Image 1 (cartoon, rainbow, N blue to C red):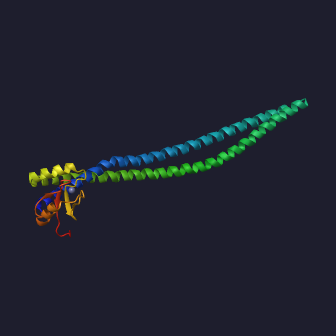
Image 2 (cartoon, rainbow, N blue to C red; image 1 turned 30 degrees about the vertical axis):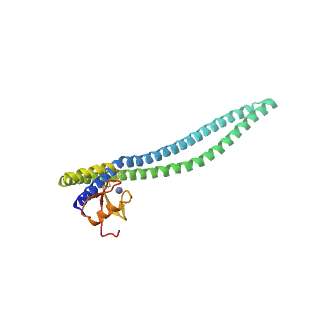
Image 3 (tube, rainbow, N blue to C red; image 1 turned 180 degrees about the vertical axis):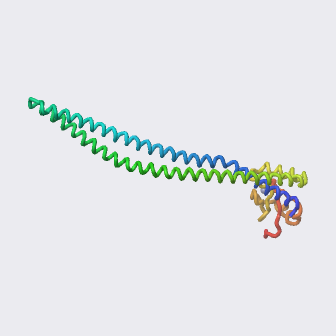
Length: 240
Ligand SMILES: [Zn+2]
């Protein structure tokens, strides 16, 4: 393999690694934001559960107040009933008493249903609060892990960047220029491609037989793919 190819491969390895590290570092805030977003959604749900529990309890208190009002009214009506002088008055008071008693019974039934509901809601709220606390702890842990990883990536990146700069100085300037030109053309960062089965392993285009012949007979020279312009090398150890 030509020495230029080996140097270009070294550069390519470093550049691709650097690009990967950079992508990981850049993805970190997004990952943290996603974790926090999920947590927030669960917080909102807990708040909604708490609100419906409170509404239920408020309604229970209201029903209880209403029933005591009715009871108070029944007391007064009973006194009035004792003093009634006509059948009409008796019937009217009795009607009112019956009405209040019906209301109390209806309220009690409603209150009982609400009580049952609120017991289930309270259990849900308690469970959700417990799950949320555990989730918060986990998110905090994940955030710290992600930050530590990112810090490690950053250090690795700095080290790699320095090595890459150093290598850049050692590589013949013409080769480096050629390498950079190809690298800018291809977003995947692949500058060096192997010639396998008569085609460029990167762009998959068939290599012209004449060029293929040259590559095979003189693999120590540097060739380029005529389609994607990547540096092309031939590995004789591999069957064509
Ligand atoms: Zn190609």
